[in-house]
Image (cartoon, rainbow, N blue to C red; front, side, top):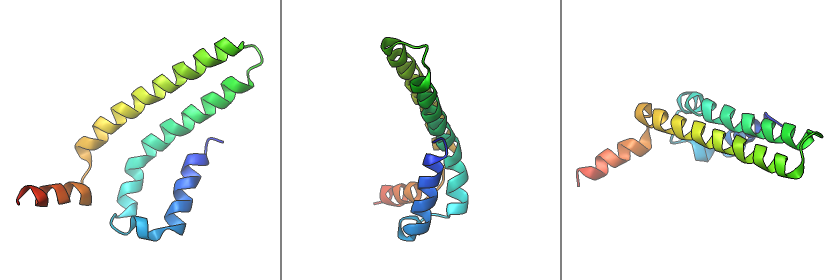
Length: 100
């Protein structure tokens, strides 16, 4: 289950090359890896929580919410950090549009 997100992105890369033609995928992909890892970790945690026979239904719900909040906070931090270092066609287009 943990590799599901990474596998999905790999499949999209192979089957829909048109989606990625505007980006140098060798540059973009490593920037996405931390977000993919955070998402995969959340999915693993949720699977472990669901499989834990010692947790009650309320305990499972609380554990899932806590894991989701932690993942959301980590993704938010990653997004802010990635936004500072990201350079690509979208940012270039904004710069060009600003000159109009």
